[in-house]
Image (tube, rainbow over all chains, first blue to last red; front, side, top):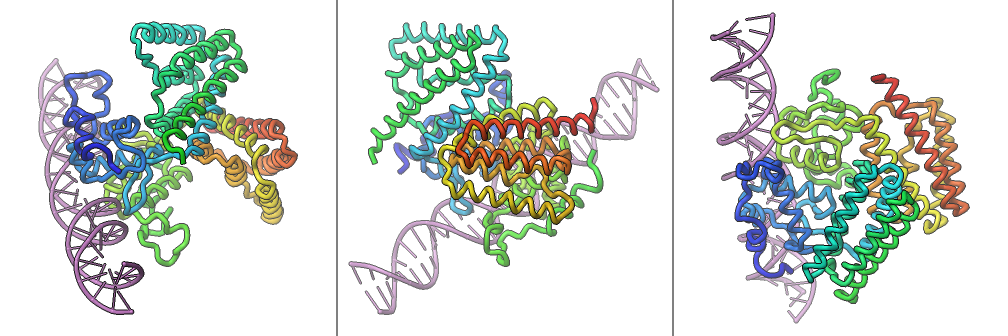
Length: 246
Length: 246
DNA sequence: GTACTGAAAACTGTCAACAGTTTGGGGTAG
DNA sequence: CTACCCCAAACTGTTGACAGTTTTCAGTAC
């Protein structure tokens, strides 16, 4: 079940040996969370989302705490938060498992995301300041040029565009809800994400959404966005079914 | 800041002295969570939502753990989950505080809730089995008759109707997202909730929503629901502004 | 009287050991 | 060979003590 090496080895490969708690060399953003529990939360979330911890895998508290170089207390606190976020499932007295999603659940998640994100884009079309919309455009330009140079279309389902788009709605709870859904979707898609074929298509669709947004056409933008996300879902489902043709 | 009595006293008044961990007398639903951390989570959530712990109040770990009759370990785990749910705000090394919401944040939350719940009702109109819709109707009948007998219209913004309505959409992530938003709204409304005047009105509006649902008119139901929630928001805002006319 | 200083008190973060539950496996009866 | 039982190992849940940070407040200088 646990692929390639012990959990400890995989953990060590993910980080730089130990978790520094009072990062003095980098006073900026990364050192903000000054507690083992907080850092463990981020490390574990990263390990789950990038596949270091596979779906349905059990998290052994003793092994993990040793691998992270901390005791079980702060680790358990981090795990509780992961459970709240829906990335792991905790069964009392039996352990916590990385959550795995069925095709149906992936569809449900996408449906929810579509509802939230189309709502966000409608709000953005009405209220977002012109400047913020323009910034989104230049971001797409940069992405495209970097795609041109690096032959390997490094555009793995574009987390940034959607995140920024949603923030234009200026509704923090909405952003938070979409962040939660987005994390689960990322987990549900696991390694099926990196489909280079769709990179160019996705970029074009993003441009269409943005064009509608510039024209302050909320309904149009919502429609384009829904189509974009629907094809993203279909892509994910196809990969999923190809991997496990059950 | 802390109103009426020490925290311990208020906690003791909320529970039955101590948290039984292996509830043997009640083998059914309530005893399902067989851990102090799990039970503490529910107790604390209840205390926050019913106002035993006031907004902006600090949660002292030592006092709380003594009041709950447990040690700080499981208590901290529960608190971490509350932070993930957005009911408390944790500041490293400084403590956790019951979250308080501004009028703007309450509006944002309602906007999100409207988007989610109208989406849910549209799904319900399309896919919900007839039987489940009928059950919703009989629930309203019961509510009305009990309202008639008990002169005190005990209909404090109706948690059940909306919860059941949403479940008809048969999309678990959607239900979960709305549960999260609903909790925050309950906290944001605090004691402003119990407005008996709106009880009758709310019931009528529920009937209208249900009628549209029976007719499988998703758009109509969504419109009625949006109006219902909007007036609920305005009601809450009015109470909020009346309490603190700042 | 006001503004700084610094040590004590209070509190949060972390740890290591203990307790209770679940799991795995050898042994035995059928 | 299969099914059941029971005990030991492994693991999760909980605790009390220790460590480091923040806050408070008396004392002092101005």
